[in-house]
Length: 263
Image (cartoon, rainbow, N blue to C red; front, side, top):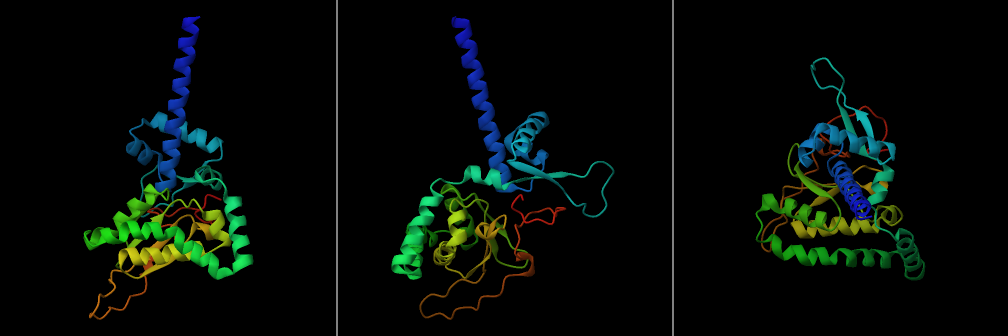
């Protein structure tokens, strides 16, 4: 009897570890996709066989899908590289619950008190982030501020990253949005968040894409020009560079006519 119990315990632990690793693979696809199997294995320290096993399971469950990378320049013979992206179903697995309740509450607020009340509510939701980060930014070097903001957003569940834009400035990308379904109906949530980013960073920002509107990633261009302090002239904000177009900012071009939502 003891042998049976021990065997069951070992099997249970193995299944739990397998699910945990699979969740890490899915999370990395969400944050870094489109991404190759080789890159996933390198980041997670998994063998090619282990990565393939988890990817096959995610593909079978509809949590991820594979796309073919378009060759760049001259390539050798062999199969074209496959890139893996999260699907809508996979993204939903990371979504927070109670979207329906939140949407109903905001609709009630809009009907009883008007759209301005929704905007004020949205600003109150990001006020904590502003209060937490704005005082810190004076101690952070300017070239590190977007990275610090991205780290704070990731800690709040937004899977954010910061990259240099092609011709100036930076791009702040949020690969996950816990309130995307609600924000699709109430854009005030996205607008308040964008305003908060400008206040925290002390520089003009421009939202280029949002998950709420069907894009694969929420992308915000951060101007390299800082807002002037008292007694100083403010430098005009330049428009976002051509390289900062409305895109998911992936490093590979993929053969697909659909948006970067995994659809």
